[in-house]
Image (cartoon, rainbow, N blue to C red; front, side, top):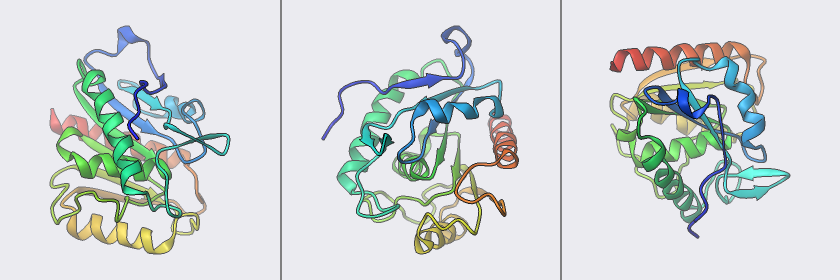
Amino acid sequence: MPYTAAPTVTWSVAPDRRPGTPLVVALHGRGADEASFAQLAPHLPQGATVAFVRAPLAEGGGYAWFANRGVGRPLPDSIGATADWLFGWLDTEAAGHTSVSLLGFSGGMAMAGGLLLARPERFAAAVLLSGTLPWDAGLPEERGRLAGVPVFWGRDVADRVIPADLVTRTGTWLREDSGARLEEHRYPGQGHGISLPELADASAFLQSAWEGAA
């Protein structure tokens, strides 16, 4: 079903500091919320505006981006409705920013991947952490779909939360078929989480992507 209320957002900076900055749309994991995810703000590029967005579906004491048929397997109508809702919000919020990039963790990676697959031309870069792309959810996935888009993919290979077949499919497509300018990083011992070294690498990646597009 369509969502009518605007997203709940925790912003990294005050409104008067946002114009003329890169916008990063940060999407939390399933069962979490925007407030907990906003704790990452000090570790992200300080010259950017980060919008930590709350997912629309209440779940497990937190929120989820879409209904699914198993971990990492979105229902097409559900992820499509959320994508339309987020794009509608971005149509207004992106004004005045120099670019829009995505950052998603776990279920938020699947949602960020859905936005990226749907409209790759809208985004300057994407940081995808500890998750999968949203396969078999009615989104375009043809060869070269992300041609030239800078994409950071970070994970621990020992992370067992996301099904291995989805991680393998994601890696193969990103490396061989997406056309993205892929940076792949592995963080042993991190598990299904986000580490300070990963955040440092992701921040450097975003800065490089923005400078390269300038």
